[in-house]
Image 1 (cartoon, helix red, strand yellow):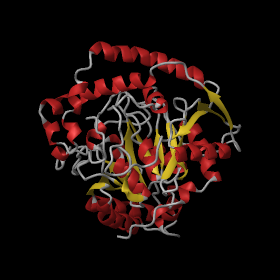
Image 2: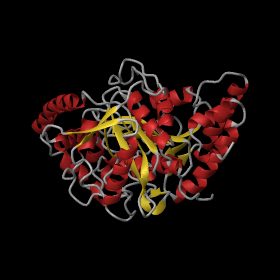
Image 3: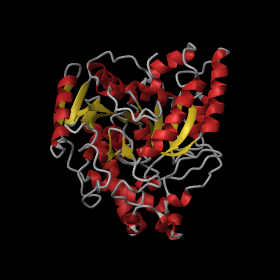
Length: 465
């Protein structure tokens, strides 16, 4: 077998099952990289060496005895540090919580353990997942997470360490979270695949709450196919999270029987970086080889304002105790010392108006997407930005991100995969956003694209331990 560092789970699992790869040796390889390369990228908060080796030995013994649990058995992984882990610090990316232990396991952690996956690290994230309104990459207790393609560039937020760790070959996969862009952004910046599931597809029990009606947990990995395999282990109802979808979900990697029909929002890439726009147009040409693409317009609604108001109001409530206690004054980013206070000024009438308008938004988007399998767009409007530069140079809420507002406001699934590089060698991505519960459809479309391109097989120059 070739080096396991960038081997997709679909291939890696076959070698593990057949005894060609030892879960213990595999885990030691990734632990070494996490402990040496991880700090240079500011990507890792805590490595869980003793726990990981214990889980790896158990997995190896089970597999040798013929008790194979499935494709994630013996595969190392990392958790964004907003997932509670018993006996291991859970920091929420915030300096005041550097040594805090929440003595329980999040449902996602339990499900992956039950699947035989090996938890190797808690990964860096933006403090409170950006809930204080950060503007620059330094808003992280580990320091600004650095992009493996160019350490002078940012990984994106807020699942920063998750994106960097997969891109740098520190882990086969990681779990991130998205409220608005926090899975798709690092997937875009780091050149990996990232899946935002349908709202309620994955239990959030034991995960930090930023915005109860927008938060979602999902995987970052080498390929769209890997994301489907991981979601299979994560999906399902949970009595500890009443918002979870009550019907089961199973990954179906078989190709669709008919030619997909996709839609592009009018002008969706007009304000994108020129190289991002060029890569997107080239990707559309490739996609036309296996799917029909039409242009579509959404009704005129304040999509960004609706979703932003809901996010700000619910975040103010979620972090009320932290703000009132003055804990925010200990955060890393200066703007996070005061950013939360403005959100507490939102009137209840504004929040309720946004909730009512969300209903209209859902109806409008449902009608617009009725004839299409997915909306397609750039995953981000620009590639990774410099580590010392504010990524948000205008006031929050004034940027145009209809796809992000619609996707998260309506709880729609989306998958981002790499679609090229800039002249400076930075990756760009393309996203496929589907209807509710349509993960299998968008994963099939993304798999087809990756079957015709090799962007996902390209990796950063190795940062030797």
